[in-house]
Length: 147
Image (spheres, rainbow, N blue to C red):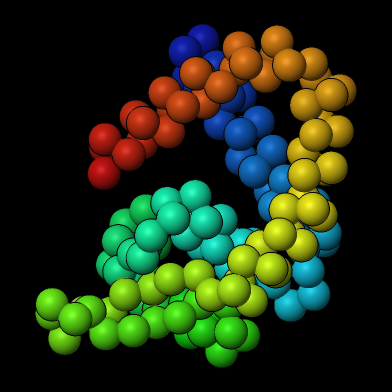
């Protein structure tokens, strides 16, 4: 027999994981042809930080290995969506910036993704979403601090 706290935890994380899978599937279907969710996430991050990042910084931000980030960046660079250059202060490092083409495809992706997300917010109601955001943020922070 499972104790109530364990049952609550299982129910919570089951909902989070199922929602994550459904969101990923739905968003992947509306992204521009050839764009993966990981590509969109990196471009979105570069747009919002408004500055270059190293591959290692991006890997830490997305909680993936450097190898996984290198793979994503190689695909984005091949598509012309990012520029990767040597760091002028330390030639062993590289710097990544979004390109004009990357900005354009990001705009297309946002145009495709925004209606899907807005529809969910509309159905749930802004108050409900505002109420759940701090809880989801706290859960994320708990997992980030556990490392």
